[in-house]
Length: 108
Image (cartoon, rainbow, N blue to C red; front, side):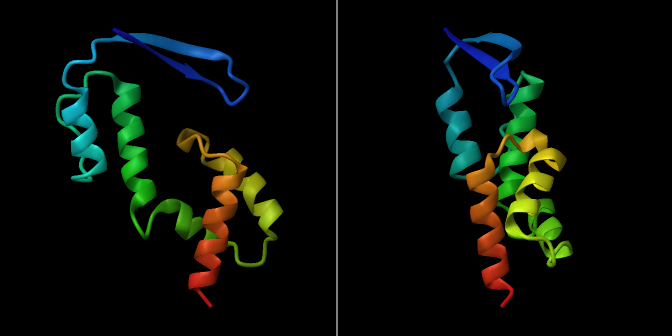
């Protein structure tokens, strides 16, 4: 058994679940290799996390569109705005900064 804990960015516990590890290897392969949401996901937060991950890996996701829609904002302001707007992704400032730089570099 494994305990899955969902926390805020300040590491305050939101919820916890006890999981049985059987079947998670195939789920891992389904999401990370086949790029599809696993059909046997029973926990709504885990399913949502998989969906967000797959959206994040899509080349034209809502994060990329948001960056393209705000070309005049500085990197710092855009990072702060994205952290507040896209909390569900659970990304940090470093990930957003890398994404912003990547998107802006590809637009030049």
